[in-house]
Image 1 (tube, rainbow, N blue to C red):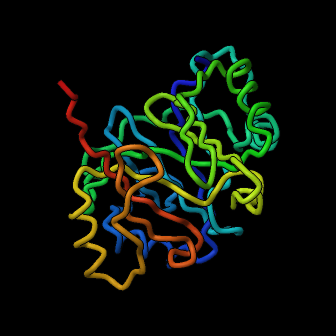
Image 2: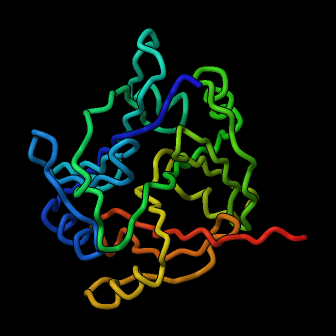
Length: 241
């Protein structure tokens, strides 16, 4: 594997204050740990985390993802070229250090970033580039009635490539490239539900998730300044005897 993880997500927010306020209402802790002073959310632990960095520019949504190369001699990734090769705008970065533990304390119980997603109609070509150029081996496909999901594990996080699975698939009408979407794993979905019911936010769920053995609550981008936030809970599976 040529990548150890992705640790930085650039999110455009034309209404920076509005998105920051909405994310705080969802129970995320906003910090200004890094020196640029822009609001950010850190998900994970001090040893394994991702930064959601909000920038005051258009369009709203995810613009690029910073990934950490596994070796210093690997050529740097460029967001524009990566979009064509891999279906996602990637750029090379490095870990900015060890944040204080308090920035990971979220009232919604957010544990970590689970996955991102990107629309890739030419799925096989994009997958081949991930395998041959980045050394990433896909996880088994998820066959959903509306789409085919191909998970690509990058360290402890996953990037999903989405492709149509038939002529009626809504993916045909979706633009190529990253979706303005983050999936955040939580261990207590009732905690999220109770929190969202107390604030003025429109949400959907809980419902069964697209991924096996999951349930989700979703705040869609039209109600959250262009960024869809999914809260995902993995249901424990008892092995059959």
